[in-house]
Length: 429
Image 1 (tube, rainbow, N blue to C red):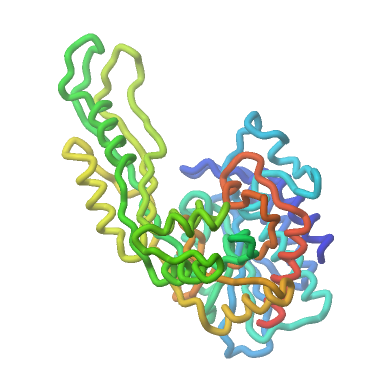
Image 2 (spheres, one colour):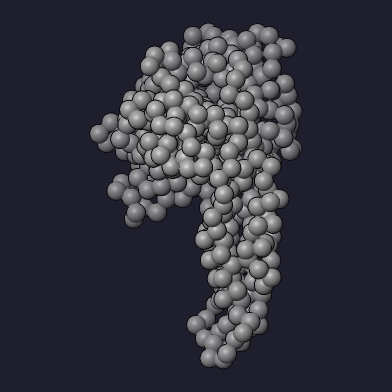
């Protein structure tokens, strides 16, 4: 199993599944075929689902002994964000093994977890283990855009694939961080909402040498600057308050709700993830205007990536409109709800126990993810989702900084720890 997880991870990284957005991607069919072959080796019957050719999802169900037990969805995504090779120290799609780490795009987001799922699934089959509940294994396309060809489309058009499912696990949870010298594992029990918009400023086109009081580039720049400079206030949810209360216990630093910066700093590399969950965020991410140096265009566009706390979507939209001013209009491009579930119940207890069985000194806490996962789409079917892709990480590795970053890599020993922990967890289902 441990050898398999390394092989599977490297093989998947070598399949370039870059998702460029706006319907353009590479290699998702090839990655789905690879996963399907391992599913067949595990005695399952995978099926492919495509909205358009090449944008491939693959799903299989492992039958449990109790047909009345709610099914568990174990899912990953096959696509990755693009990587510019010239920025990397190595070929981002070569899956090189250097100093005990696997380098490549997808090493942490999320072909490491895909490999853990496949290796554990195969081991269950080889051991003849039948779970109590059905386990639905799903590998989705298009998570790195908006799920139009992946989980969003599949839950809308083929909800029967998830019949009986009550819970799900996927990426960005269960990883360790060195917090004040204590190895602490963060299980994802919440994630912020997605509110992606396109801003358009309209104005009067004309010669670049003229005086322009109605220049859409200026209108847009003023709106972008206002949104980029806006300071959203700190607001705690049940998850983030519980996290900071537990961080105070771990570190011995008092929790000051008005100024949690000391606890954020004590959280090491995980602090960047944690800080983003204490407030709504809005980041202009793309600008598009003009076509010639001496022509003032009639319009200019920008994209804004906003992430929202639970029940804050309308408030965020209204604030963005106010900041941008009357010269700018907004078009909603992608929206997904914020999710938050309790850090309690049988499934959470099984995650915690699996971590403690592999690491008896483990401290396990809940946290909110600042980004989003395909759990948003499964939630529309009433499925409760968690982030549980367990990894025991070196204290000096900036793991969270490698999501969508340069020189993405995962330690082999972390991957082996992860597959052992995930396997323990799945054996309890």
